[in-house]
Image 1: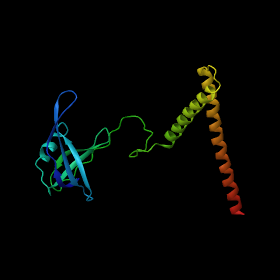
Image 2: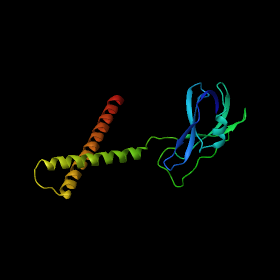
Image 3: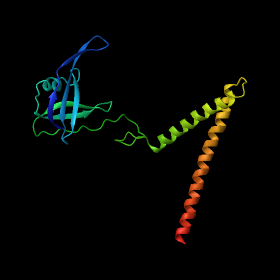
Image 4: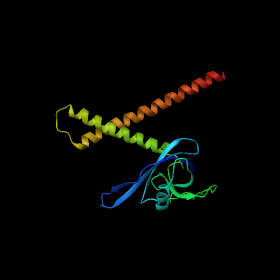
Amino acid sequence: MLINVIDVGSVNTHSAKNGRQYQSLEVTYKNEQGQAQSKKLMSFGNKDVFATAQSWQKGDKVNIATEKDDNGYWQWTRILAEGEVATVAPAKSAGGSTTRVAGSNYPTADERAQTQVYIIRQSSLTNAVTTLATSGKAVSSDDVLALARVYSNLVCILNFVSKLFITYIEIKTFEIIIK
């Protein structure tokens, strides 16, 4: 990534919770698309990049290799020579299959469906407690769970029926169009 340095802040010293000290430095730059951005560099990160960045001046053009860390943040890993291109490391595999689409932070259809089930269950429990609390009698957890299941099943049945109705309307509309 080729950057154009706009400003390099002064080095700040901080104390970590464990008592150790570290330094930080903020670099403001324009990226390859001309957008102004900033990057906070830490002395405990890539030491070579941190040390070199301290000497940068406004207008310097710097070629930087970047890599996504385990937390999904882009880190500056080293300074490249002018014209040098960083090699792309293969994506790390945690083993096993994943339910997410590679490169996407959006939930899959199965994950969205499971989230809906959790929401329906939570709502059903809340409404069951509210309904049973109006009686003024002592209520057992079994009573709450039984009524919550009734509410949850009712929501699922109504959802199923509405989908059937929509499908029926679509079929009838299609039949009218073909005639």
